[in-house]
Structures are given as structure tokens and as C-alpha cells.
Length: 294
Picture 1: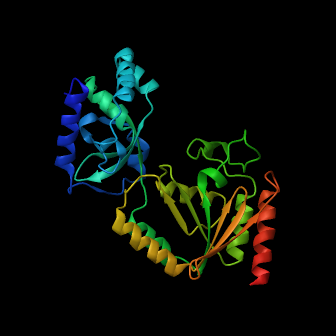
Picture 2: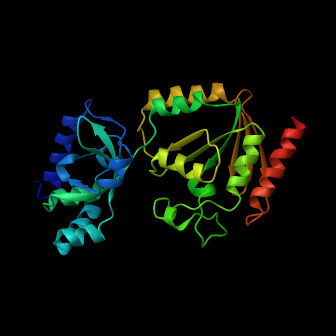
């Protein structure tokens, strides 16, 4: 295909023209996500909302050059599978996959004549998924937490909740110690719990992970870092729906909580001192005090 960056840019432009207004994300399904680990490069399509596809920003020829050198050095398919990080992709209709992360690897593969690439398929929530989550809400107040900054934790960062060994392969994320207790406390207090992440996690897999800890989570929104993935109009509709459903939101992070009242456009901050095993208890104490004052 394209043998230089100029040729690739022509190829990219043609790809974007061919897919514009045609391709839409669809549910991949558990078995597809589990079994499909590789696909032909011709089945991969660039994301028009990604900076890579915006002429004034990308692609970065230096990054493509580095990956191209790696592909030429690997030589064999087995080496490529072992050394190249899988592209994160979303299943789309009518065919193939939309690239969410890995455009420069895809470009290098095209330029060096690779026929296929390793992939990781994720199911990101679409508008109808988030609207269904809102319909399942049980309260007019909610709590929000960032999965990567607050909920998930490596064993090197501090104490974590345990999972049986046979589940650790499928669910590699570990919950911060005390998160299930905190979530049950919030459920008992009548809060809906929404977790989110800028990273590309399959939202149903995250829901299943919390079920293992016997906790109830109303909303899971992942891939929020994908610029414009849902579109500006969809974003505004969802923002309005959430605001109407939840006049009060409490955002929990590692440093404390922020209580936001969307009706009066006000917020209050409450810091916590504890960062270790007693962090969740201090958060519970703070929210308990707020409920008393209400």
C-alpha cells in the first residue's frame, strides 16, 4: 500500500471519505471480545474524531517511523504478536473495527506491508446504554468516582480487595480495599453510584466485576477520553438528562469529596486525611455527616 508518509496520508484521506456517515458502533458480544485477538489491516478503520485524523494535528511521522522500524525488525508474525501492543478497537457496522487507540501502529503496519494486527475489542457505552442506566436509577442524588484514580488500585499502591485465583485472569483490575463496603453504605443511604474512566474498558465487563463483590452500580461510563466519540449533540442530551435526574452529585476522589448542586450551581469541598486502609471509612463518615445536616 502506501510506502511513505505522503502516500499514507492519501490512503488515510480516502479511508475517511469511504467511511464517513456509514460506519456506526455496534455491540461486539462476549465471545467475540474473548476469541478475536487479531484481524486483517483492511478490517481496521481510522476514527475521524481522533487527533490522528485531523490534518492540522496528526499523524506524527516520527512515531510512525519508530513503529515501522519495529515491524521491519520483527519480521515474523509470531514476533509481532509477542512484541506489539494490541490496538484497542470498537466493533462497527457494516463491517470491521474502529480504531480507538493505536492509529500510529496501524499506519506503520500499512506502510510496511503487514497483513494483520493484534487487537483488543471493547464495548463502550452508547447513548441508549447510558439512557437505560438513567432509567434504572433509584434516587435523585448520585455519587461519582473515577475508576483509575479512585476505585482501581495495584497491590504496590496499597491494600486491595481479593478475588479467587480463577477470576484474576479475566478481571485484572483490583479494587481498593474498602470500596465494596463504601458502595454498600452508599446504596443503603439511597445514592446511585456512577463510575467512569477515560480509558477503554468494556462497560459490561466492569459491571460484572462489581457484581462479583456483590455491589450495585447504577452507571458505568468508559472511554470518556475519546474526543467526540458520541458527538456534541449526544453529549448535550446526556448532560441534560443527568442534570434533570440528579440535582445533587457527590464526587469522591482520593483527597476527599465535592458536593455539587446543579440547581443552584454551587459546590462544597470536604477533604480527607486518610489515604490507606481507613480511607473508605473516613469517606463514609463525611457523607454520613452531610446526610445529617440535610
